[in-house]
Length: 335
Image (cartoon, rainbow, N blue to C red; front, side, top):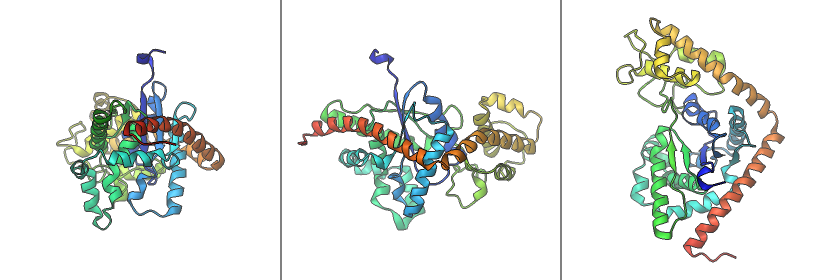
C-alpha cells in the first residue's frame, strides 16, 4: 500500500470519572465510532489522568470497568480499533517525563482548564493537575497520531501538544507526527440545561442541568422539561440571544443527524413544550441501544478483562516503537 493510501491514525481517550454526559458523547465519543471504518483508531480509558483529583481505589476500579463497557456499548469494536486502559501501557508515564522537559512552565500555566480547576479546588492544586497537558501530549504523540477527535474545550491542550511535538522535532530531528484536531459536525459544545451560558458538566451542583448517557427515560424527560429557555416563545437557532433554545436544537440535531436548518423547520409554529418533548424523544431513542448493550457487557467481566488485555498488548507494541526512537534520539544507552 502506498503511503498516501494508508489510513490516518486517530487517538483519543476519556477519563473514567463516572458515566459521561450526553455532552461528552456528542462532543467526542459519538465521533469515535464514526471514524473506525476509515481510520486506524486507538482509544483509551485515561485512568492516569483521573488521579489529579482525590478518588478512592474501589471507585477507580469500578469506573474503569464501567467505562470499558460503555466504550464497547457505544460501538467501539476491538476488532477494528485498538482499545486499552492507559495505565496498562507504561510508556505513557515514561514519555510524559521526557515531554515535561520540552514544555515551558509558562505554557502549562496558561492552560485555561488548570486555572479553572485550581480556582474550584484551591486545596488540591497538585503538580499532576498542572502537568496534565504533558501527559495528554504523551498520550497522543506516543502513537504517531494524525487526528484527534476532540471537544472545543480541549483544543488548547491539543495546541500545546502540537507545540511540544514541533519543539522536540526541531531539536532532535523528525520523531513525532504533529496531530490535527477534529471537531464534531454538530454539538461541538453542549451547554448546561440549567445555565446555557456554561458547559454541561456532571460536576455541577444541579443534577438536572446535565443528562447522563445511562440515565433512565424518565430521568431524561424530567431533566429536559426543566431546561431553561426564554420568554420569546420562538424556536430558532440563535446562541447569542436564545442560548437555551439553541442548546436544545443542537442536542436535537446531534441525535437525529439533521442539520440546523432542518431541525429549525421541524419546530416551525411549535411551542417550547413540544420542543422539549421532541428533544427528549430523540435522546431516549438514541441512547436506548447503547444502554441495552451496556447492561449485557457490564455483566460479562471475563470478556471485559480479555478486551483490556488484548488492547494493552496492541497498544504496547506501538508505544515501544515510538519510545525506541525517542530514547535513541535523546542519546540514552539502552540495554
